[in-house]
Length: 284
Image 1 (cartoon, helix red, strand yellow):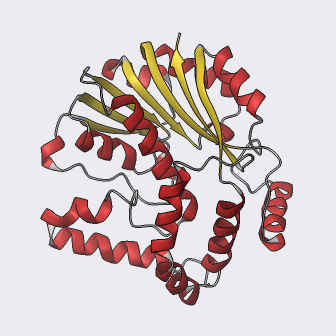
Image 2 (spheres, helix red, strand yellow):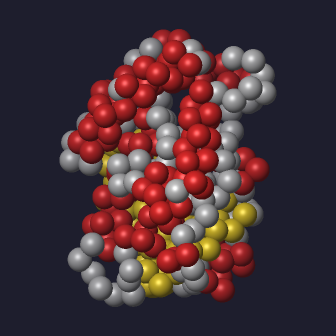
Image 3 (cartoon, one colour):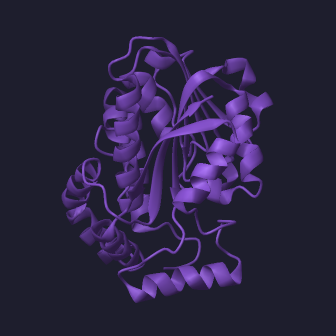
């Protein structure tokens, strides 16, 4: 691929954005459907989407108490917009992200029907940035902590803006990552050795993420592995195909139904070991 040229996938997302502008009524069907977080072919993003949405349903699905949601490191704000639409009991949904590091594009634009309920804030998360919108009943932190040098202080900042008894959903990579394709594993090792990986740590052990959260004011209620052997192989193949340009993109697009089916199954099938951890915790 030529440096600076858009990838086939980014061009595809751009085409969908143009279409959504031309057909505003259909925009939110295109950019945040139930089965995809946005127009993406990324296996990791799709699997995480279904895992996080299932946890939100567990917390909010049968509860009519009103409250507020905060997504720390929200990316484009997919979870924020979706949660606001899906759960009217959420009075306010807030997302915070350092957008200059977000490769997937700018914040989503909220539909008029969510005016006043969705707030997407560009900046480094700290409690003062969101305190006026809190306290929060539900907090999300999805693949963020591995980027944060002072992760304990970061977790305590989240606790500081959470209501008593608030729920926190966290996803992080695990230590000792495994790969089905040796070339993919070697590429990630090369990035870490060269210092070009955005992660400040590879990931967390089960004991490590539990200790971090409990030291930061949270009680862990559920901790399970994610991205087991099948998902690892699928994600590695997806990564390799993405490097092939347009041909790889077309193959990935044709396999999208299988990716979504696997992501749906991942909510129910818990691997014995995986490349990630999904945690649900409660504010003490």
